[in-house]
Image (cartoon, rainbow, N blue to C red; front, side, top):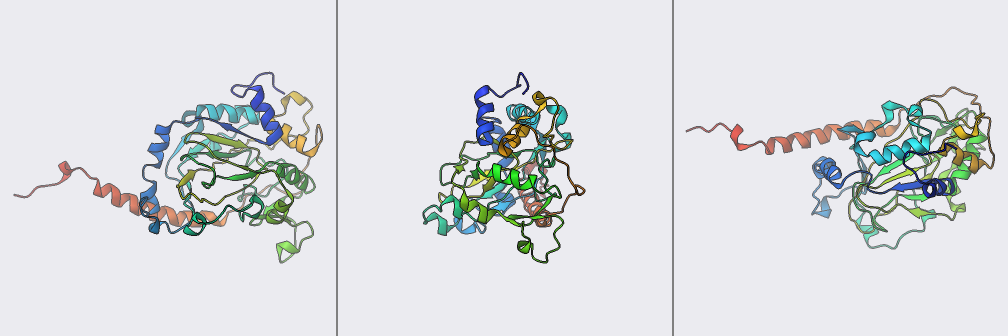
Length: 331
């Protein structure tokens, strides 16, 4: 374990090792959040004051602008470096945040309905739909949630299952061939079954979650940032309050895979230490047996279409807001 951390205190370190997540309060300013979300309703093509125009429960928006985490949220960046073992291990190309907002508006049905038990939510998954998963995968080194709107209990905050980290880690440890993200499930990458669920080692997040009891609803205030272990099981929850919930979910990646078999234990990152703790070992030699590869997820095509639609609405707004001094008066 490094002797010193740039930002995290001992209590935060221990909390992460026990629970797999930490919350950085006031990591970016409310002014910055307001600036970035200023045109969100125009982009959505909805009226914030007319719920009848809210025609989708949850929207994953494309991005138009980006900024380095180091300048946008310095404390969050310092904590990310502490969790991952230092800036030199982090892929600089994946160290930016954008305005690819995830907006949870709820529905009229859920506004009038009691909350579901967490196990009954229908969106349980592990992030990373763009690569084959291994225990040491560098593509998604942390699960990150910057919060752009205040989130109250029952307000659509992300639901997490800290105890799931142990089970996901052990599943991946048993599959050095890697597993495919197959919807809300994992399937061994070498599977030849026509139906994923027919494979003996097919893993359904929705079925496995029924076994767990430890759940936490991620509430918070504008400017807070949640940093989680990459194997954290989580799900969108129902927005019973119908107060628009706005977050993003930017990935952080490493230059090299996680190393769970370091000669010097002091060089383990906090994420590596949490993974080893989940496995119940002090070190774990892990060698993949297939080639690492990326996947083009279906959401990319959906977001490309959304981006074109948003561009048209933003262009119309810009034209409408053109100052009068640009207008030629004819006498």
